[in-house]
Image (cartoon, rainbow over all chains, first blue to last red):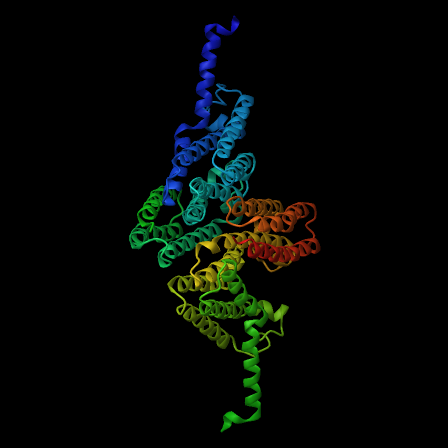
Length: 290
Length: 290
């Protein structure tokens, strides 16, 4: 009965705590919730059971992605975040790896209970998120693209769960462009740390000016795209009256501010503002659905 | 009556011929036609008058884009294409510039006869195409992104002309990814010429390997995306039976071939194949609309 001695039990508790921390619980909540919002945005929350399944499956996949990220970042975290479950020794790397794979399978498995399209999206997102940690995030632009794409896919996933594929394409496009611009912006902010860590981001390999141009280009496109569903009668005037001052005006300011001052502190402020701006955009869609 | 002397007349004819050549007529046809196909793909060609207006407006904007491109490329064309209207002196740069502006205004003006959404798309595309020639095409990725985006917008433009905004989003997404991958591929092909001309493309500033990764990533996404409208019941089985062997199998081959051999001759062959593959994809959508 060696398994029941106190030190062994303490180690088990420590390990369970570590596995829980690897998920990054707050992050998992956001992952699940954003899919629920994705379903809501399409104007429908029924069948509600499917919405819940999609949220749960999205939460599992988010947890899996966070875990596998810690697995591949162990050497960096030894220096930057020694208290994390892996560098602190709470959980062994091997256990963390199998924990991630288990969560991916559970998340994709849950998607099977929704429908075939959901299964396909969950599988694609899982593969993308795995390779993000494995290599994409160290490649210029491909990492940014992946993060933005998965953020957009969350809406489509929610939409698909209630059988509204096409209605989700518009918020998904907005989310993609929002995240993509913000990712490049954050890469300018992190330029000195990334250079020290030999990461090859877009501003490092193509220059800050090219990155500023890309941000301008993406946000100009996003502003332009926000006009379309209103002009087309897809969303109503309430949408437009929120989007124009609430989202587009701030995006114009961001474009301006990114050219004027590229100090990390300034970029950090802008990047936080963009997060709030996304919520305003989401609200505008929710009140603007015809 | 000095205006009627023969040499003056010959010069006028020469100039009119030059203005016509600046449009690149074959290209203009394709521009107009692709919008018509965009309308057709959404499953509707009525009101037919709007489809014709959209094609005509798209053709005018294509001509404008080609003309402004010659205006900004005059120094390069003096060496590479001395017979073009501008380096040969058939048309003065100033005339070419105003000719382009006139065509842009005519194209955007025509879009006003369709609806507000069409006007907004035509304006955005015109601004993008102007800045493409002015600077974007000399910037890594932003040029590629612009070309791909306008290629995708053509479908949305056609769709909007028949009031089918959402139906056009799927083919537009496919067209965007197809062109984007192909553009990066062509950048690897042109690497030595671009380096000599001091152009800063993605493979030049981030390396061939990053470009290979990006192509792999984009085409993997495209393959994955082609499954969605079938799984979701948006397009029928006929679509899937054409797309799977006709499009996706070739894309897999492209991913493989891009890693194996990056010689310009090989890449050129692949890039031509991709053009044919796009037509197969288009056909699959046309027969696959429910």
